[in-house]
Length: 220
Image (cartoon, rainbow, N blue to C red; front, side):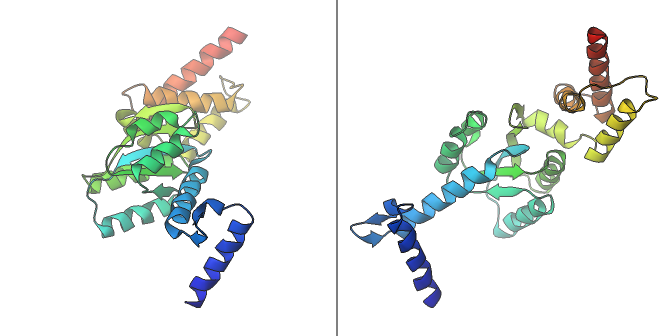
């Protein structure tokens, strides 16, 4: 009770400063209003500038399955949001880059915000294999590349970041036949090549390398 009174005193102070004034009605603090606003702001801030945003249908998952999902996301540094669909759709539409994902928010939806792209995709794919009701319907990579379900599946099968970096370094080394002028562009090309083809990880690396070689010849 003492903690509850202290929390409400803090909220009253914040409201007096104008930040949460809308949570009051007729001089009475409305906790439900504050909770909705707080969760919405947390969601909008949580999805901002993330390397990977995934929209997933969660179906009728049990509490222990949700805990397992939360644990698996924690291991790769990702956050998962399970708010009412209307709130998440509104938050996605707040930014032009994420707005297209709002169309995928239907039914029991979860939004996953990953600090890593491939590692988060692999963790989601592994969880989906064990839970048939859970599957990714679409995603946004690097705040600009939209992925459909099949493209996301290909992303989850990409080589690890260490393998990609090793390939980058080998192509950038002084003795390499191909010198990559723009490593970041090469990495994006690698992901796009894998998402746009049915080939494996090696095929994506080869396609991206060929594209870098063509670009190099065009500028030489």
